[in-house]
Length: 540
Ligand SMILES: *[C@@H]1O[C@H](CO)[C@@H](O)[C@H](O)[C@H]1NC(C)=O
Ligand SMILES: *[C@@H]1O[C@H](CO)[C@@H](O)[C@H](O)[C@H]1NC(C)=O
Ligand SMILES: *[C@@H]1O[C@H](CO)[C@@H](O)[C@H](O)[C@H]1NC(C)=O
Ligand SMILES: *[C@@H]1O[C@H](CO)[C@@H](O)[C@H](O)[C@H]1NC(C)=O
Ligand SMILES: *[C@@H]1O[C@H](CO)[C@@H](O)[C@H](O)[C@H]1NC(C)=O
Image 1: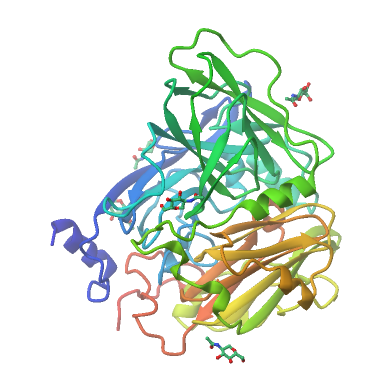
Image 2: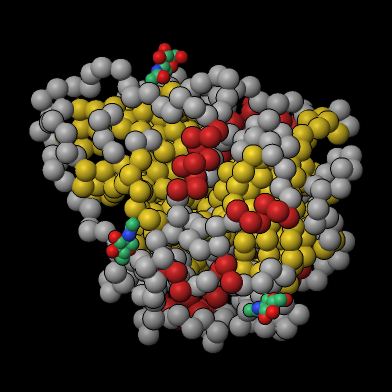
């Protein structure tokens, strides 16, 4: 057992129960600062990680332990969260305000994550205030362990492509608009890897095949992604190997991640990579460059157009994104060996999003409850049994039609329950929902109202397992979740202004056994704040 491991023991205090001590460790030292960035040619205040915008990619292999020491050099509290990293038994590391105390200015905090039983493409982002509008995000990739088969040949190279809508306005003025109870105006542009029009370039060698890991790290717009003259073969979605389907363009909703293979099989020149916003009256677009190393010609002609039909095209594409049941995921056994369609549902939860004014200010809600943060992270309050911070059951299981109200909404759920969640979107704009701590099966989506009859059209065989799903305007999406991860988990819209103004809550997955086999104790290096200040993280 290496020195690193024992050094960690001192931090973690739970060596006896961390059964994965042999898994490798990767150490990261990150300095988070404000710095000037010029993505659209004008100076902006960006959030940099080790001087970079976007932040550095995290490379890892299934089961690696990631030890990430984050130094907050901003003049305000800061947290990073990890989209799609499941933090098994360990929601304290999740880095949202419901689970983790903010890192005070000038201080540092070491996240101890394990990418347990995961593969695939994800990203990290700053979760507090409106920091995400200033940067601080980056890609996370989890490669398969060497002996686990991957259902496609090794690509010649593997690129992270972070796409997202972007404002020229400073993130603090955007936050101030929301704090005043106003809506944000439409974003100004789309960035690709932190760059504006034709700023990003990806070099390929003719005849070779490349993996592109595309994540939508933006604030509110679904984006369509395509490459002039090239097809994309979809191979992985948020940790699941897909049936390898070829697309000429791909809708990437906010918070989602996709891996595609692209073969440089065209004449040697440069090609446009085009990204366009979707489902809004106003349209944003941008381009980057696919550069052949032996290119004879710069980009030419109009950038490729996107899909001309809107929702039908997109919903059909979504239904075509399915799990390859015979391919391996993080383990050697096939992904299809877990028969989610044969498990009995123990509970159905219906969640309806809504927008309204409360006390003259714009708010957003789930089942009429608009989330407001407590003075103490919920998970931390739960650990120390500090009463009065939140109430389990403060959000109903079904839409009630009640007028919108504010509360620190927490839904209780039993460890090992098998839950059906139906997202009902009665609004005229698309939604994108994410659950921390889990991947879930997207069993169905359709226009109109969900009824129990809608279950007849569920895909109970090879639905995709992922952590972020879209819900089309005036439509529903149904998911199945096996609640096998004890903790306090954020269920949220990925539309950042709406989340900031209340469209989120926490799912408290609880086991009455309270065993360290099901959930690790609070890490001994945990920051304590609010009503937990001055408590001790040492086991008694
Ligand atoms: C972080 O970067 C700032 C600005 O370059 C520097 O002043 C500070 O010392 C750095 N902190 C750490 C912990 O590296
Ligand atoms: C802060 O960083 C230092 C090294 O720069 C490290 O020794 C210390 O453990 C870190 N503190 C926390 C709470 O992570
Ligand atoms: C599914 O995975 C298997 C096993 O790796 C592979 O041989 C097959 O080509 C894949 N099928 C599709 C349609 O992607
Ligand atoms: C991108 O937007 C600009 C300005 O609205 C427009 O002139 C241009 O035709 C658009 N390009 C594409 C490919 O949609
Ligand atoms: C599911 O429910 C049905 C009917 O209630 C029951 O017969 C069956 O045994 C259950 N299956 C499992 C796997 O629990």
